[in-house]
Image (tube, rainbow, N blue to C red; front, side, top):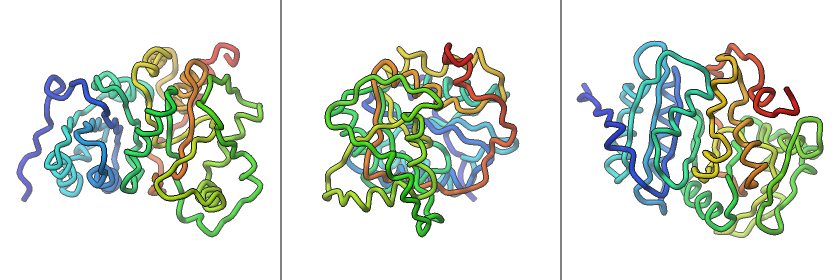
Length: 287
């Protein structure tokens, strides 16, 4: 039987670091264990912190033996880990706002609890944000069950940044909004294969938004409002990540990064009651 797991304390965790990883979770013990295992295998970014905030209906997911072992592995490798419970649930944006407030790091990686990151992914993202100097970079997630489903009509939405990203005002029903089509299924893997990117290099490309794995400059995210819009949206909203990214894009720009080392576990969603899109409220011209 596993010994009790030390959750840590907010006061002990909140330190000025280069990077913290923020993981919201609910009712996904197996998926959380895989996500944490991916983080534990990262190299090249020493000492990053990890915050896991759980909203499970019963026992917290990080108490599961597999997830608990990965928490211990992260700590053993020198990564501070804070384990918290955020109940009652007040919506996705409030949960992300709570996670963001737990960190004082320069960069924050918003990572969903159903994403495995291959080794080297975090280092590549941090390097890209260092060099590009924009508001965020991200790795769109691959759905490997679609690996044989090639959709060349979506590849036209790939557009590489030829210089540092600049602020963009991206809205629905525009060509820029359609960039998101490249992130469905395994489209991004197929585009990456066509580009034949040399080893140990990366490319930045234009996005509307990225789901699952987004690295923010924390100060720029906060200056754009963070997730504080949770107070203005119904608790059953969706698209809180889109709303935050659109705000940062408009102020500081953002980019996707290839190759992406993020893989979606393709588990059923735990967000079954989906209400209005958060960006309908956060973007004044769409309200």
